[in-house]
Image 1 (cartoon, rainbow, N blue to C red):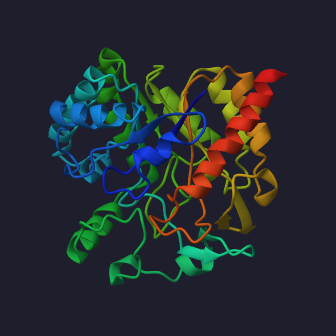
Image 2 (image 1 turned 90 degrees about the vertical axis):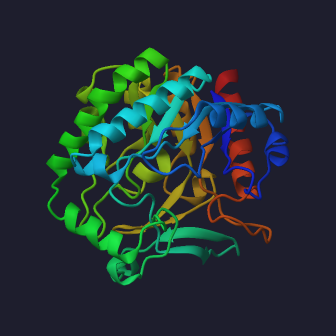
Length: 346
């Protein structure tokens, strides 16, 4: 297991110097954030990013993320040009030693929460998702202003996307994902870059948009679309774990044993009702997930890939990007490393 940390570039208040001081930290996962979705990532910029990180004594082996253009998800005629660009980006990343690309296939937006600074009983602030609040939101009226929502979209763009997706079923989205994977996985194999899809977060439909990477059956289907070790998973305990029917340790055991987990996100969540949850500390007793069982499943099945503590609370008065402060994620890394060291010593 190789411990990594999400880093959002030179404007991230959590600097590389601070990340380097976390015990057991081997590298960061990052991306080139200013390049428009669908454009090729230039080799020079990839190299510059890697060299900057290496100078701080850290590795860059995982990219999170190379976004997938909405036209690809929608299956529009423009997708072939965009997929060609995506394959070129894979090749450029592989040439610079990148081993894993995390991506998702969620329509329009990434992870969604109803509030970013909910105060928990201990005074810390956490991301939460309360179904009754989300159900009252209308993105078409500008009532969603959260991370994951692409703020580069105008109101008209959002309306157009929703209109297009209203004609897309889950099966359509599966077919478009299959088309995408059959095109890019050969390029990934040639470049020795493993593709690792992130589950939908949360793993159910929101605002009527289709979502498909939600449970064990979906992960099985994903792996079979292109039966290659380069077509794999970013297994996120927090995303999958908010649905009671998802047994996260069993999912880890199943997919780690066949070598399909290329990147692991570790965080705890507390289910507080049907379709509602709060993000918690990484400590098992603070949430609904057994972090020891999850890590034991990784260890027992020979996982040697990359892992990172996922979203953290804001603690000790820290200000910063919601879910991505330094202190609680650093505690999460130390907690994960402690469990891992104990498992290895048995």
